[in-house]
Length: 169
Picture: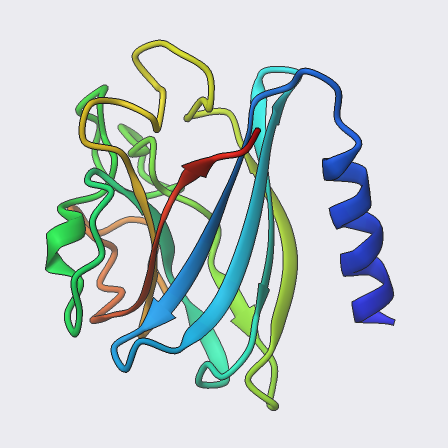
């Protein structure tokens, strides 16, 4: 059933007219692809559809990071969270959130995750919130859950997967 929903979502994103779109393939420290993400900007928000496999079961932080560079094994080359408005971290922070903050990713007992999430804090089109700025943007999955409050990273632990966002034609 999940696979059918994923395919339906992919087809829906592929059928979007002139809306800006992007993709990312996230690799783990060993260089193995563990996730694919499709993004589309519509109605003032960016929708992400993510499918992952081979991750540790449980809850993981996931964020847009400020640099479109994913050098393993620690992926520190991706920089800090994407934060062009210089906010505090966390979806539950009274003074946040970073533009790159996203809801946690839930991975099932078999190491798989299929989810759709949306954010109005980034853009695929031009402007201050564009993820396609001069140095690009990466999407990073972390080892632990994001507590959605602690600045600067939500105590989400090591970076376990990283992918550079690429514009789709």
